[in-house]
Image (cartoon, rainbow, N blue to C red; front, top):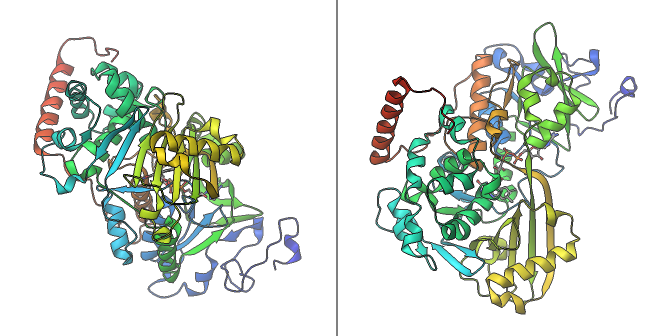
Length: 541
Ligand SMILES: Cc1cc2nc3c(=O)[nH]c(=O)nc-3n(C[C@H](O)[C@H](O)[C@H](O)COP(=O)(O)OP(=O)(O)OC[C@H]3O[C@@H](n4cnc5c(N)ncnc54)[C@H](O)[C@@H]3O)c2cc1C
């Protein structure tokens, strides 16, 4: 127990090995009621390792971004403490079945390093429109490789779409070539909606309504009329268009927590990383003398460190900004208050018998609602449910504000009715068990114009860094892979700032195919020439 002089703060019972059991440790300070993070290493600050053992890093959040940063920093010998709000680690659990697409090479390299095999093989998937099965996506790497975007056009099985409608997507390649993920490209395309992009590039109404709209509803989490054209192009190119095999996805054979995060954290613990759960970070402290962040408040405690990483979603940062007179002094944080999250909902159902489901992973849309949704056959995807005589199914809903307010019973009824709309056999099933997770504001909303308000990995505080899927970087990845990469980038910024350790190696996204590269070079030259012509410099695009 902490001594009674701490009684004005929340009292805290600590396990014997906790890094906060510091009563006999020399450098832990009580002045200012603060703790030095990772006090465990404090007795070892002599000798060759003295420099690294005195460098304490606090990371807030233990998703892909926070764990990615923690892993690299503890391998380099920093004293790393990870703070997590949830009592149970691995927040992505319960908020969706996660796919890992072919370009997620940094994550695939990590699981190899961990020596684990958490993923299924690549799987076919399907898309249902309000009229029924609309598209089947094959395993693209098994088919003859064609230059982009021919593979996507030729090998994808469009079951109801005329060739004429499909061909209207080709002109979109002009925007894909023009959008090269630079700051200029983001600024050019971000102000317009994805719907406007498809309209300007001549996409047919049917192709938009039955294919692009549902795909964006689950890929960008919002309908295209609410999403940024820049984010759409970035995501489509990374996940689908850059190379034929990119859209091949593998799936976790259980929960992320069990299959990846648990063994990963066990390894990190052996490397000295300290995980503190049930710690909700609410504020940051500033040292006027040094101009740096000095500490982080969580619960009744303050943790001091040399450097900090915030690896949390937008709604959490907004909550911290509301509490923090320090962050409110900086424009880059004030702008974050303009950003927004998107609600997600997961409904996992156990039925009274098996249902014949053509594909294990499915994207759906319907005319009567504006949310996007997916459903997954867990008997195929997850080890735990293989061989189960009952059907276990999970549906994830995005932009699901109107569903989040419903009672569980209503949600079960609605989900079963949506499922029966796409696979009739569901109408004959009865639900015997259910698990429902509501996750308000848990997804990043890339709304038109949001790029202006997103943060970079570095901040105006020299020792405070950011990571997550909403942080601007130039790697070109998306979602989980982007979070993991921004975590590694944040770790590299700390290596640089504290002048200790090696930089993490980040695998770049695969190069553009030659013809795309050539078209991009041509496009750049054309833009440069145009910039030199005596034309008005600022056409509204
Ligand atoms: C339904 C759904 C389906 C998805 N499907 C896919 C998919 O198929 N493929 C894909 O690549 N991506 C998918 N995503 C997106 C993916 O989950 C995210 O991109 C990724 O999890 C973001 O990781 P992160 O580390 O940036 O943030 P998070 O995973 O959100 O981690 C942030 C952590 O911070 C913790 N935290 C929050 N507040 C505090 C606080 N105040 N103090 C301390 N800790 C705090 C949280 O509990 C959490 O653990 C999906 C998301 C959802 C919701």
